[in-house]
Length: 307
Image (cartoon, rainbow, N blue to C red; front, side, top):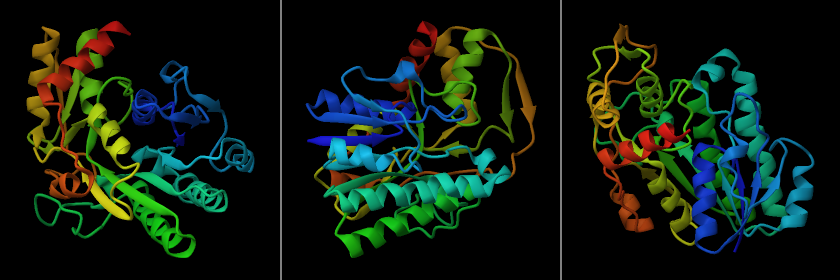
């Protein structure tokens, strides 16, 4: 199968590419290597065909005409919550206009399906736990708003053009290749700083919990979605909440040393507890997380030790 992965040089996208190629598929990558994005040339799989351009670019039409993807895995995005609040217009331009460009070209080039990287950010502050796919979507950042809007465009193109989709709402994805200097990805940030002997910052009381899912498991969900869960929206997490304090202790244990902790107030918009209900993923995708948190942390720390 020919599959085009937008954002395929990024943290999650590159793992999706590796999984698809490992399963024998022909893969093309669209990535702009934007300075504030996750795309890195070191993440590129040499067996994939690279198209270096922005998803908003008119030249994307040439990529679709040449590569003729049967499926698009759409991971390209403006993914920074901070940038989305500083420049909501830019955030919407990439995440909404860029998506519309991709969907329009997919529909006009006989692409059969789009797999979309959605987010827990569409839910906002949980009204109940665990969060299932029927939970109200009340996003609290422009980034979360664009991900929610994107799901509506998926439904529209499915109804108007017959373009099938699967939207995967990711929990807190972590693992090798995540940016240890970014604003998100506490496991990568803590791993990088503890390895470097630098202080770490823990906001609030550190007991806030999130649902951390290993990137390899996320890539496997994308692989399964190639021919399953048509026109479905699916949570991808573990169903287990882990506190920031517990993460710190686990990472320090794997590294074999600890560092100074700098305590800080609650960040605006931070959610105290976010845990997914993942029964639908098991039912419609046949997917369950296989990587336990200690194993995932070891793999992540080993990656950063080697880089």
